[in-house]
Image (tube, rainbow, N blue to C red; front, side):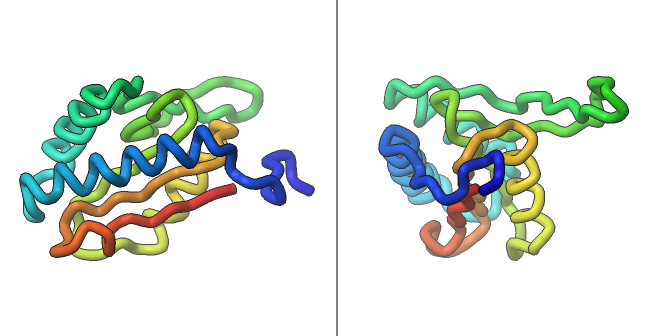
Length: 134
């Protein structure tokens, strides 16, 4: 078994937060629709989540530990919600494998188990949400 305990189910509290995030993303998307910049969706989703009582950190610096040294390589996690759920936001034509790989890498580097990859540039938001877990 890996150090990430992938055989273990995602804790109920993390799943509950993910459900709230998905609901909030539906709200933001139904209000704004597709076609805006990622930053607009990030700002509105963060607002919507805070309105629902969740803690939200945006653009969280993620240093790389290389050769035993913490280096700022410019990596930023779009959102960490309730201290336990990573959110990577996109406003792109289509999600590419590199987008999923990015979120999986962030999960590995932070030790978090669950992340949501949300692409707001879709006609129906449920088609733009991917749940990735370690």
